[in-house]
Length: 303
Image (cartoon, rainbow, N blue to C red):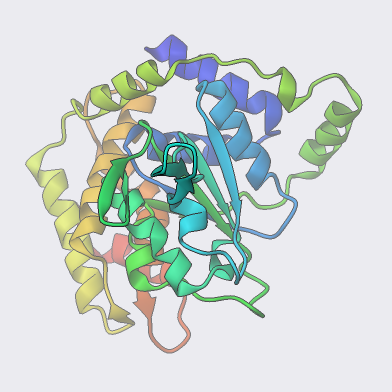
């Protein structure tokens, strides 16, 4: 399977210049069944990344532009009356995709944001009392601008907790930006990307990630980290049990991508800032990632 992973990474690099660490984190979330929140300024390639991933895995891609007038049914779908059959028929919404991009998610109202809660956790939507399963695999990439707050609705803790990973792409380096311009003038277009892996292979990779071994000592390390986040003076809300599960699952996928059959403590240390920080509510204007780094420095790894 390492050849498939390499092919997938190379395919994404054809569309996204640089950003190897971020691509790796995106794949960690995909292979561990999680979702990603991209907090970044406009124009750094968030949409391009989502479209490229969908093309690479031969999956169905849908994009939702979140605005204050967006309704929950605009995401989940709705029942419409068919005058010919004189019956209601279900019209699928964008949630019935393999890769769903929720662009500027914090511009949607809390009511609409909540439409994503069920589908992100249970891979189903409930419309008019009937539950309907969405496609599998199902992967959400949501974006929000961390600078502009006017006309936005901050994501509630329950919604933030649904995202396995939070990360930023950031601006490219000078060399990467030059390469990007040269690539744009060339013939390399996203429409020319071809699938390099099937949806069935993605699910098989997900299954293999679940077989990765993790020692009890490392599980205890995860427990100690999340419990320390709840007891820290700098936080009003610590990491939930869902966050602990997310960290373990992501660590297994990270080890798998590194061609290992077991998790090591360094996997936890690399992933913790991206998995725990957005689940913490700090006090006194402190930054969540600073708190996580402090926890990593103070909580020992049990041998």
